Image 1 (cartoon, rainbow, N blue to C red):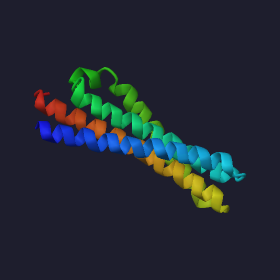
Image 2 (image 1 turned 180 degrees about the vertical axis):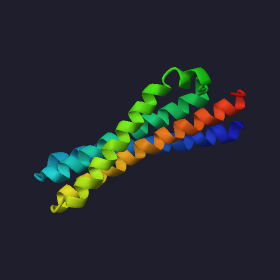
Image 3 (image 1 turned 90 degrees about the horizontal axis):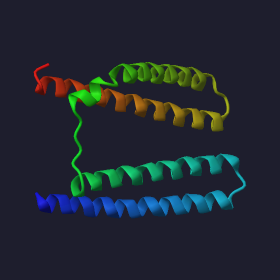
Length: 142
């Protein structure tokens, strides 16, 4: 098990280095270009790289400092809010799909596609929380 943990940490730290390089590269590209669209794309990528770096650190911390645990109570106390948020996410996907279908400009289509994929990603993450809730409920006999 220790070998698997060490390998995971090593890969995640290497990956973090690549994410830091991506943040530097995208910042440099942003400073170099006059294109507002390219600057926006680089800003999106830079922000995503920052979030990836944070998630990677969370994973490292989960095996070096404190294990990750999600309890039935953790989920139950906020589940109604999660369901309400999920309904909102589905509405944003609906809006993005409708607008993308009507878009005529390739830049608009590209950014609407990005927004649509990001909202779909959020919806997937909420579905994963629901699956976790179901599994925790089964394990606790609920």
